Length: 46
Figure 1 (spheres, rainbow, N blue to C red):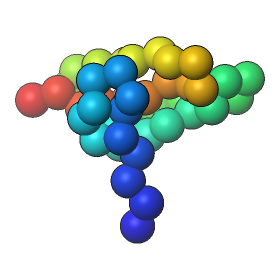
Figure 2: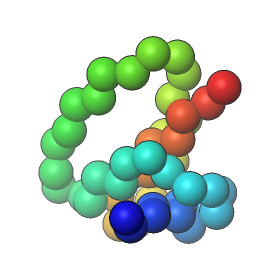
Figure 3: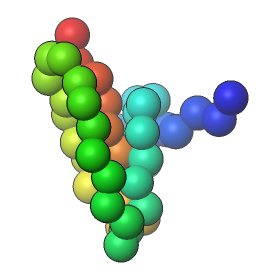
Figure 4: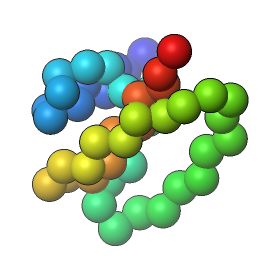
């Protein structure tokens, strides 16, 4: 399984969306989103 490590905060993300792509998520709880030059990284928060 591939891991997505965010270059901004260096934490593992549960989803990476490249620039120019759209996505939708269905989640319970909070999500932290880091936006970088190569897309958005979604982190679950507890």
